[in-house]
Length: 184
View 1: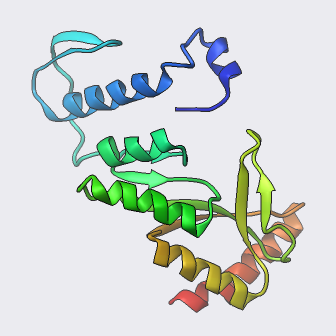
View 2: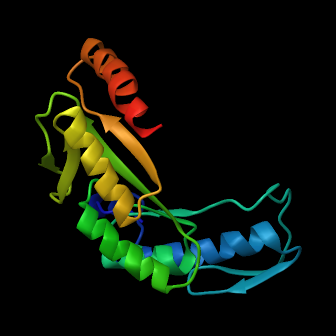
């Protein structure tokens, strides 16, 4: 859906209606991917007797990013996955509860920053939102990951924050040797 209004102005797109536009886009894509002949009439798209080939070999999962109330509701209604960035386990748990009430199977994933040096447990995103990361000792990070798993996270996308390539390679090596083994 996006968050930066300026980007929408570049495209002459309506920022305030972006959520409704996405909802309708998802509905139309799913119809085109599944049905042989598609007629669709919405607020943004109108097609009649459309044919779309080739069809996907299997259903294409649509994961909804973001942690706003709208994103969580969208994930519950239309998504196959929910993928917020850097939010706390209690916020994950609240979102998961809302999503599970919808009665659909929705995969829960989280993108989170990891600081192998223990110096960046929280930060502000480009939009100013508070974000949390994994930081501290191996035991601290393992405990944090376990808290996220208990809250409902099934998959993690880890961003390793390093100042240069040498440090990045060292951190990846440490991550793979020290942390990944803790979860096998």
